[in-house]
Amino acid sequence: MKIGVFDSGLGGLIVLRALARELQEYDYVYLGDTARVPYGNRSEEAIHRFLVEAVDFLFREGCALVIVACNTASAEALRKVQRGWLPRHYPDRRVLGVIIPTAEAALEGKRGKERVKRLGILATQGTVASKAYEREVGKLDPRVRVVQSAAPLLVPLIENGGAKWAEPMLREYLAPLIKARVDAVVLGCTHYPILKRKIRMLAGVPVVAQDECVPAKVRDYLARHPEMDRRLSKHGTVRLLVTDITRSAAALARRWFGRKARLEKVKID
Ligand code: DGL
Image (tube, rainbow, N blue to C red; front, side):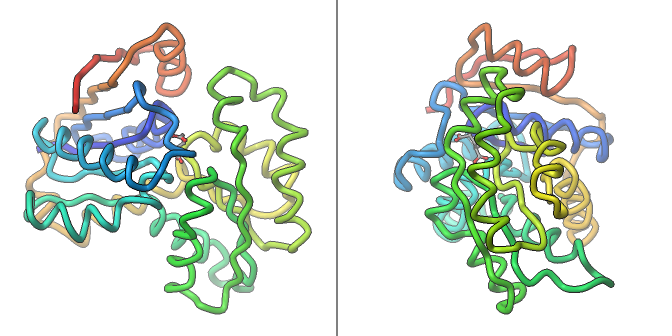
């Protein structure tokens, strides 16, 4: 069986590329809901419905484990899917999100040095409003103060090839985090690793990027769950499925996944 990677669109290809590099032996099926992206400012109810459809589709495609690379879907709908829908429909499969592993990585970052006291989160409006990072960081270390900043314009800017114009927006979005004197900034959205060098420079503190921390967390998970690891096939294949293909989607996929990226269109609802 395979590892499914789900995202609202193509930003998750950045995490998939890191996974396929660092855990090369596994077989991956990527699903990007490009027909309905962005999820960042949709209702919780809509995101829950889309996530159920996507995970169900990936399970029917032969995935035993699905990683929800989309922060917005992880933040707004994952717990409900894990607690309600999954045990009823696929009790032997697993769906993991990116919020908990990213929160862990952010707090581990300073291990051996001074602990993180104030943590900045840069994310979409939906993720910020859900307070999912606050909740998960609070469970790991209730002493940490979480300061959030919603950055609604970054996804459309990055998707339209405008990263070079990001600086004034980043200054604005990072200002509340810098003012609160955070010790580290979490990039809580699939697309933000594209801007990580610039964000590192402007924030002046460690930046936690999911393409750097998620693969190690998945490796840990599989080491702790050998029963899951045994079910996963290991031929090093990757399929990229999307719910809509446009010319710009194909170009973005090549930019974010590599020249060989080939998108296949599927119907999931
Ligand atoms: N994938 C989303 C996330 O990580 C960003 C794009 C969207 O808003 O759908 O939050």
